[in-house]
Image (cartoon, rainbow over all chains, first blue to last red; front, side, top):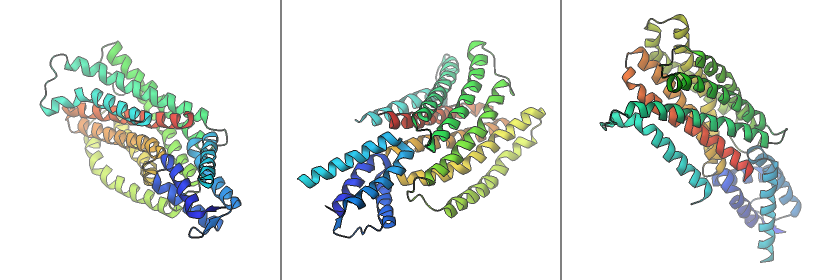
Length: 86
Length: 268
């Protein structure tokens, strides 16, 4: 399990080059709300994180194509794993 | 400097350099006896080049999207409209550069320019739906309808006094129809453009914003140029036509930058 704040920070940082920081943050928070993820909560489960990334990737597909959206999600997961290992 | 920033800078430099011969005389900078010749070649070829770039990149971007991606038809229909513009521009280049004749008005070029508008309008309206399908917070449907109504009313209020002189000038029926049709079609395109601009601005700072900022700036400038052209022609201020040419060049350059941005976003 990862810290919710750390996970969101990583997601927003990785999506910002494509969506801009304002939309990356707004989209992440909006999907957290829809998925019932407490943004001020302490930890986010793997299932919650996967669901959140799936939703964000569905939106990204429309702008950058499925392949690139999947690559960005892969980068987010790698960054999260590196952060967890650190 | 990143590669994307480099492309932005290159587009800006080329667009300004090609528009400069049309603007410099208004700033009191003489372009010499070769100025007219320079404007003939630079104006025609830069417009054709930027439009061709926009059309080809739109088509290639469409091909890169998955078949079920809602942006694929957007870019495909956009490409169809832009290719019609390219053919229209090619007709004008043939008259002016190849045959060294003033292009008649109306001409075959106008048929292609007019045909392009339904495609461009359809692409922009479809893009609004595609944005809505992202599930991102892009505003409510109610907001978009409100924007459409407000822009529609504003364009009618601004468009009527500007286009009034066009109706008062005696002209052949087809020329009259086209003089009114271009600005009216532009103002129709303006409605989805403003809605998309309000959505796209939420993406500022990202590559998605750059793509749509380029495209939408291109359409805004095209509207401005068409309205100016109709107004200057109707009021006998044809000497100001060079400003119109410069605006078209910047418009087509912005369209090309937007389409190239989308293609690179998919490819890189």
